[in-house]
Image (cartoon, rainbow, N blue to C red; front, side, top):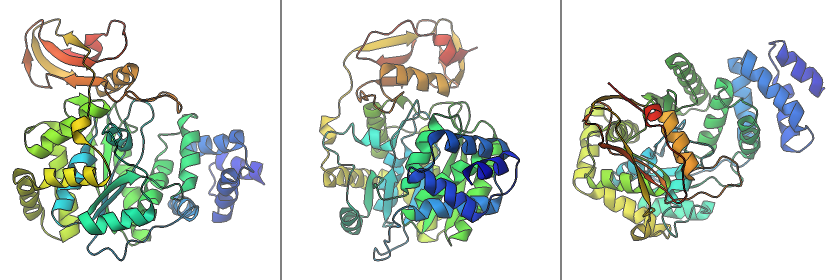
Length: 408
């Protein structure tokens, strides 16, 4: 039966709900071995899936665990998901902004693997911050302060955890149908009423072309309609790192600067405002113009930062304890000119090399290391100027500046 299912998809044929259920739940239960599941995933990656198959697979994922119910929490619950990128700490900024405006935000985030960091890893760089809240604690906290950012509970879409781990080691991570089912199953099971998806495109993202991003966007909106959820998507650039910092503690400190209004007007800040505006528009059913004004006022008044502090305190964190390494290494410009490009993928790889991420699931993250960009795209630099500061805790070999910065 399993071989027939794999062969059917290898030939590009549509699988029935029963066939998908048999092999995916068989794998979750340990009855289907890795090598057979890997074959099916690769066949899906090569031949794709029909909309019906994607809807069926999403349902199978959702039904593999609990579906959270926050209907007793007043207000429209709005969630946001990013497909992942270099320096993407937007959740740390936009969730407090949105919550400070009276919209409940229940954010269940994941960890990073490889060069794309996870929100939970960033939050764990705050000493004491709890990322393992129970369903009861989540419900109470969102009622009390409108905001929770925690790790995914073990009972939430367990199918996705095992399938993603296999996709990660079988070169099937970038399959659009599998991305859509993975993201949407988690978002729907998490109990949100409305969902915003930030789809990253570029050399530092899963998706390399805008065409693929638009396909994924269309798919996730269709899945949302199947479950009576409003889905909005934003397609954003990931050829360049988001903001100035890549690395856990560094990114948290940068997010704090944005919430305080200290950091303004770079690609990270602009995206945060764009995402927050969409979420506020959805949550309050108001125009973009009204929502944007509320977002600006939340930051300018200090309400957003106070909400962030409230979140951290409530989850036992201490922002005053955030540390970065006191050992640094400078990357300097080898010629004068204007910065034309900062390669997101190369910055991500460098951050990983320093120890800010995990190459293997058992690696230990060093929260204090990372990369801080001192110059951004479009700025003029003189030869010898510091382009980036590396925060390190180990000796590193010579870093190729030209691989990261294109100066013309």
